[in-house]
Image (cartoon, rainbow, N blue to C red):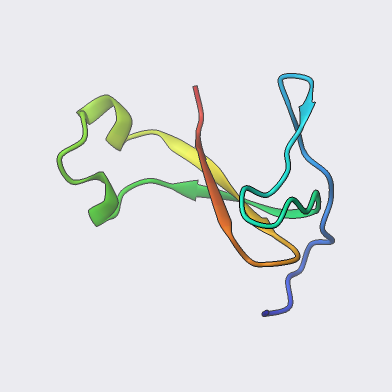
Length: 69
């Protein structure tokens, strides 16, 4: 896995600690992302222009995507 500039940390969303959907690990690298790729093709314009963030599991590398509300 590549080296990151941030230290992995636990993340809480709406009072609940996030666990990786694949391995159950609780340490993530968090990155802010702009959703303007081919992934957004066919989505509503409102969704297309939102920024969001992703959590990269420090153990297995699975990426969890979140859109800002």
